[in-house]
Length: 114
Image (cartoon, rainbow, N blue to C red; front, side):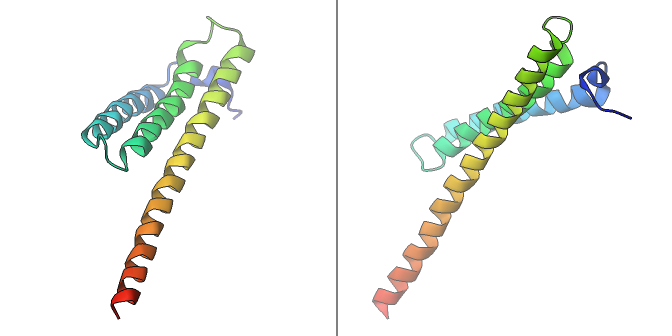
């Protein structure tokens, strides 16, 4: 079975994925607001945007068919998905950099005491 844009129409699981993506976007963004001024606020905003863009790629193949050309739908899907994953990668790198820095700070602190 070949998976193409047209196979996405009227899929209940796809609608569930879109709804879950929208809920995850809102919850993640609301969590970023709770962290206002904290070091993790910006990564959580990026994460919510990444989740939204990945979800938007699903919205494009589900609801934009027939409204836009197949090429436009395909471009919106691909670009949204790539940007969404890219933002989530940036978040991962930011959090890892911060947490690694904390570990190094603790090591340096314990070395100075001893």
